[in-house]
Amino acid sequence: MSIARFSPFELLLLKSRSQVDTATLLLLGWVLVHRQHVSEGQRRRRLAQVTAQFRHGHELGPVMSIAHSQDLHAIQLAAEVVRKECSKERSLSVMHQAITVATDDGDISLANHYILRFLADLLNVAPATLGTLFQELTGQPLRPPEDPSRDAYWQTHDPAYYAQKAQEEADAAQREKASQEQAEQQQRAKADKQQEKKQKQQEKKQQKEDARRAKARAEQSSAEQARAERARAEQARQEQARQEQARQEEARRRHYQRSSPPPPDRTTRALAVLGLTPGASKTDVRRAYRRMAQLHHPDRFYSESEHQVALASARFQRIKNAYDYLMQTY
Amino acid sequence: MRDLYQRLALSPDANDHQINSAVARCPNSALRQDATSVLAVAPHRETYDTLHHTLSDIGRLRARLGLTHGAHWQGDVANDFSLPPDNAISRHDELVDRVSHAVSLYNRWRRLRGPWLLISVFTVGAGIGLALGFALSLGLGMG
Image (tube, rainbow over all chains, first blue to last red; front, side, top):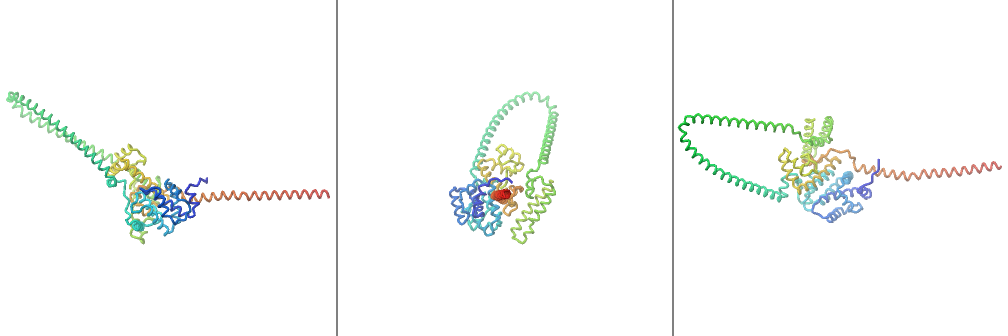
């Protein structure tokens, strides 16, 4: 094995008087970095305040700079150390510190929602415990995080954008309406002119026709009948053409639906739920499903709280759905 | 929080043109609306991208630490940001390995002085023995 250089965080950890404290410090720094509307000095002061009784024996500066660089390896190492070394009481106190660092008045950034939940999973803190801890510290319940991948989130958080969009749309509609009206007016004027012309023509025609009528009256009845028949035929043909078009469109749509493949990531996602990489064989899928189903079966959590059972059944359902989907596609 | 990029089969650094064409191709109207109001507006996309980056990091961490089925990792987030476990070994084990390797190197360096000491003692001893033998044989020859 070739020896790579030790990273700054590894050196810090090796020199530290207490590895758990150093690792906790980095995780708290990570939470702090994702807190919004706070200056760097305030962050340092807050961290120093919260970790006053830590025994790490080194400066906070390097830890904060590692946290700022979002070094995933360092954070993973810190998480592993914390998970390995923390007792139950200690993990609760770490959770406590993380919540304190993340918020002062219950106002918590979206990223920190997920980071706190990650820490809770890491430290084996149940959702109910996390909820009560949060409520005690901030006086507000821990709500599920909002979802900025949805239109509704932006409608509440950026109403200015929607107001502007609505204004633009209204303007466009008004412009269109105005242009339509203009067109209509023009058309009406044209129609009027045409009508006048027609009237004149008709008058002329009538004069001529008066002369011809006597002769034509005999022919007229038969001609009219012929015209009506022709019109009926025309209508029928049009109807048929329209039906044909509709049928074609339907066929095209059906063809499109059939030919559009299922999203390619769905298989990958289903495999990921079973803890497999793409390209796993059917036997692998079946074996992974058996293992996961045993691990997450709701009956295993029967002795624990109802909430645990509900969570387990949700997980089990997810695993089962993934397995069913994979069995269909494989 | 869903991974819109994954759902639209895009990469997270796709440009506006790619996003627009992907949105136009998308058959789900609700997803289309969300994508236009999140990804097509620059400030919204910036916010979304920051959180997307953090969540991808958390997803990777969870995959490496075996926390992809945690009680706090449910719903859309878990569906979209869970990664298959990679073969990265535990960072802590790696650190321990590296420290022990460094320690063994150091120890070997210290130990190297032992053999040299032995060799020098042996040579000195041999030299003295030779000299004594020579002197003895000389004395015998004289006598």
